[in-house]
Length: 81
Image (cartoon, rainbow, N blue to C red; front, side, top):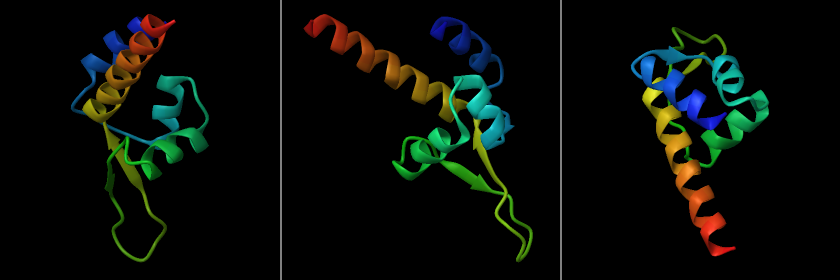
């Protein structure tokens, strides 16, 4: 499943994505995406145009980098077993 996500994300690496679309790509909740942002694992672009609520977007290559880091972490954990 992760390989399919990587293939799909590599095609859209220069696009800006909403938190909702990133959550769908990663098959996680929107709250999980916000946790990745808070932890510094995803960088956002704030598209706010005034005093309205924030409209953050995530660059596709950031999502791809997160997936690659998580895959590397997973491989390291599995080899330790």
